[in-house]
Image 1 (cartoon, rainbow, N blue to C red):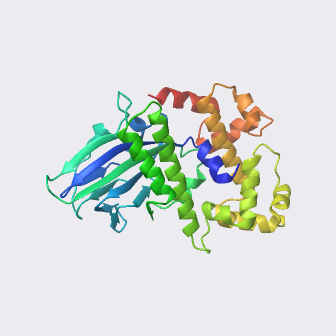
Image 2: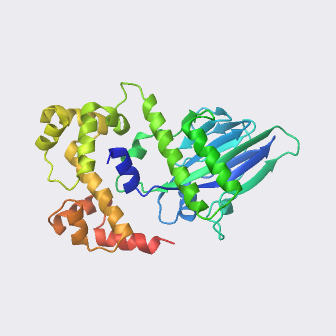
Length: 321
């Protein structure tokens, strides 16, 4: 499994298309900060990613601290860090969000169609999707993504196909539709991330850029493919095709930490996933993520998250809705 796919699986990414917006000037839609709504939208998730797909007309997107963007049909704006933001027909418009909308509906049907604006103004349509995921103990993808990503797509592109499929599914609900829309939301996110990766300048150094570096990419792939192996910097360097010192320097330059520290952090994320999705004993989970000693695993986990694995699991389960 490649490193990006492995991260997306282990951080428990799940998505949904929540709103189908039909607007006419003047109109404004404001999305609250992710931490305020993630628990109601994706119970059990701790981080919210939002995106909007413009299907008709034009609008402005405003994110605090970022220059405003004018969007048109075919544009997708992704906010990986869950920042509060505004979509509007003109700059400067604001509207207090209706917090009751940001929850899973009791009847389970999504997306919710919303009409807003004047009776005869220029029309705009867009869909609003959200994704929940884990941010801790370790999600290297989030740290590598900017606050805002904008991509454009034509009707014949992959993203355009996802959008058309999603709209058709939402207009004519069928059995299994919620599952289809959830996976479409996740596919759109992955495709946006891949497009963003393809646009990174050659001099960029972060986890995402490391995936395309021939040496760091091989090292990351090896670690994710077999995280339980008793890796050393020597064995990893052989797999990557570099000397140990050259790999350590290059890996740290891209990823921000030495290879063995990265492996430890990633094992903690895998362990957290096992703790949340099953009831295996701590000893079994320790072995599943590459530790022969339960005590050594517990020490490493406490160092990463601040509490022993048993306490962490109990607290997370008790806090779940």
